[in-house]
Every structure is written in structure tokens, then in C-alpha cells.
Length: 475
Image (cartoon, rainbow, N blue to C red; front, side, top):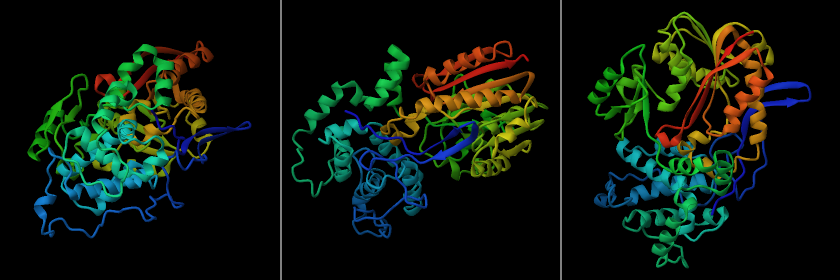
């Protein structure tokens, strides 16, 4: 059982004849029954329609039946939580809003404490991570069926958890008596148990062979929550102490010297410690890429696909604020976010630069001691952090994406000086996006670059999945 869905809009470089354009946004046609990510024309979540909604005027504190609506995590959703959960599910499944947008909308409208919010997010993330499982348990076969029966998802989830079953109004014909049997059957089917759609199973096995089974299981598990200590302002030990003072429980992460795992349900971004710029939320595996670059004080470093700057800020800290980092991206709004984050972090050696033409790259040739190319990729290594994206078939544009990676690596690597270092990285676990790209690049640039080393982090390690390769420019 799988939901075969089309990928939503992609951002990448594309060739038009002999001309190259940097990360052009392309609109792909979507099947209304198969796309789980739809927005209104202005790009905002669409909330039209007569489907059941959460009443934002509802005040659980003033309700005379308050005890019924208290937060009871061990016995299931309260009535209040159930209405909120249904509203979020409705936005994603019926209105085709992304899960992140739905969370942002509803948690802005409905003010609840961090523990309760974390509880709800964990449950919904698990539902989407195992959507095919709960579709089977609910007796649903197509995404269009699922859109008409959203309450069955939470009903089946509560049955799976052994919680008190909620009311299921307007669901005549739903076989409650067969729930236990369907759960047992789903548990016997590996793809359902791991929440793996058929397209992902076929792609993962074709590239990783027998290694795929372990990674598939890991991708069905809950993602850990990590932060990175900003060494421009504190050590990891000091960060742990400061967070503890604010009631946030953490523990150090082996193999990632700056990482802490957050083990409590906490509103990290509301803390004084965050506002003081002492940490950034960043997966421990991603932190290994920053360390892999080995940026040094006084160097000229280019972060060629910087985005909002998670790795850029780490490089700035590694350089102790000395030297210069050119943070480049094709999206101006991401660089604007980076400026705000850099100010909070006290990283003042970062120079944002928008890539608005190929000339921007050419002007930088042979100018950097180190170049980080965190290339656009399928994102399969981090898919458990975006559980709704799992139900869109990502194979259709994978070949085109591989060509984009090759094009970016071939041109951006030339920004390194002779003797300089280039690090190519992705958040994918597919060899075709990783080591095979490096093999192709080295073959085409024989005598000009050499591979120093490469590394993988895999989801089965507890971190997200990443690849990193370190190259040296010879000529």
C-alpha cells in the first residue's frame, strides 16, 4: 500500500538551449487526488470550503466542562486537542497545505503551552510518517478516499496507541470491529509498518540494495532534536547549563562535539538563551558537515548554497569571527533570514551575496581558500523531518536533479584557488546523488582535482542522512 503522489514545485538550475539559469522555479502539473501540498494563488495556505474547522474563538479555559479538556497525554487526545488535530490534518490532507504551514497557522491562532504543543506535533508527525499504515487500518485505498474521511485517521491512531477511542460521527459503514485485525495485518507488512510508500521502497532498494531495509526502518522513526552550541558565545557545557536553568533537559551527543540532544518538550525559541544567540537548532549530522570543511581563522570561505545559513553560522564560529565568509544563494529572502540569524549569533564576518546570474559565480573563480557546495538534492536523508513529503513520488525529476548537481559542482568548484578545498555535500543517502557524482566529476576533471576523503551519516545512526566529500584543487 502506498500513496503515489506527484512532487510539488522544485527549485533548481535548468538549461535552456545553451543558456544556464540559476535555480529557476518551475511549476509542475498536479493531480488533485494525489498532491498533498496545495496553496492558494498568493502562496498562502487555502482555508476555503465547508470542511470541519477548529473554532478559534473557542476558549478551553472558560469552558465549564474544563476537566474534560485537560491535557492527558497517556490516555489520548482531549476533546480540545482532538479538534485542533483535526483542523491541522484537514489543512494538509484536504486543503493540501504543507504540514509546516499548517502548524505555523494553528499554533499562532491557538495559544497552548510548549509541552502540549510538542505532544500534538509528535502524534501528527507519526501519523504522517506512517500514513499508509493508518490508511490500511482505516480501510482506505486512495488519497481521495482519505480526504473524505479525515477523522478515521485519528480514530485508527487512537486504536493503534491503545487510547480511549473518540466519537466518530458521520462514519456509517466504518468497521470498528475489524480494527484489531487490520492493525495485526499491517504490523506483518514491512512497508506498512515502516510507513514506506512503494515509490520510495523501489528507489531505495535500487540504489542501496540490502542496506536499504535498515535505513527504511530508521526513516520511519521519530527524528531526534539537536542544537549546536555557538562557540562565539559559549561552550557546549555552558549551553547545557544555561538551558537547564530554563528547564530544558539536554544531553551531549557522542561524535558531534558541539551538539546537544534536547530530550524535553521545550519551546527552544522562546528561551533567553536562544535570544542571546548561544545556539542554533541543527541536526548533529549536519553539524558534521560544517566541521568537515575545517574552516580556519583568517581564510576566505565561500558557502555557495547557503540558504538561511545554518552551516554558514557554524563556519563563522569555527573561524572565530576572523576572515570572511561569502554566503551565496539564489533566494534573497533566505539571505535576509541569514542576516538576522548572523546578528543574533554575533557572526560579523559573513557577507551575503545573491546569485542572480552566472556572472556572479564566474567573478569568484579562483578566489576562495575553501568552498562548501551544499547541493540541492532529493532530501531523502531528512525525510522524517518532513513526513508529509514522503507521499509525493520524488522519482520523476530525480534525473534532472542529478544533472543540476553535476552542473553546480562543475562550475562552483572553480571558485576555489589552486591548492584550495572544495566540500560537496547533500542531505541524501542515494549513491547517484553522492559518490557517483564525485566519480563523474573527477573523471571529467582528471589532474585538476583529487578526492581527499568522503563520509556518510545514515539515518540508522540516529542522525539524519548526509554525504560529504572533500576535494583538493590541483590546477
